[in-house]
Length: 214
Image (cartoon, rainbow, N blue to C red; front, side, top):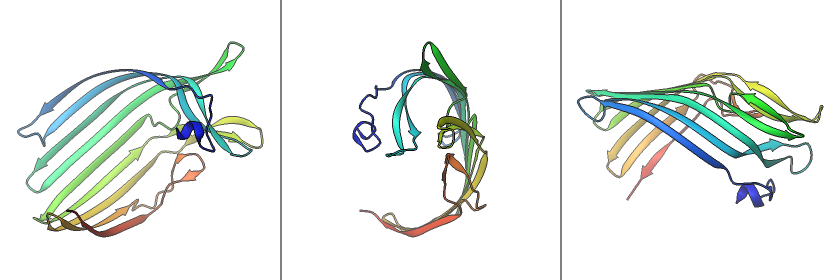
């Protein structure tokens, strides 16, 4: 509804349609906390909804890209021993977006807009005390393509978003099953990066607090 009726909406939008094929295998260790999994996927999308930038108000709206085809491989695993827990995942993705320009012509973008060819995540957790847990997470993302409206040339142009890596640290202390305190520090390396061109993500930041549930 937002894509249709918001200030950035487009009443001529068509709904996305998709065909997905997945095949995978998973191997467990001695417990379900120890496993390795591999999944191959192939997706075909039509009338993909995409947000484009404009030079005039409302300075952006939603449009349909005609076709998106992508395929890739996902690997993930976890291992727990004693007080240590390890988990990691990697996604390899490749594909093509095709936008029809009219008059029998089209424009194809190798790889996918805002989607990295490779993305890696890993987390290491350690239970210091029965009630105190510390964890560190690493995320690495390869370069991606994006599209933006250039108000100097009045054309939609492609730009490359640089690869980046971030490190986060999390600590939690459980006073009881219903009460816990936490501290969450993100982007410790103060990395400056973009997931969408022109909109920087947060650099080093942190949160903390006490959570009560019932």
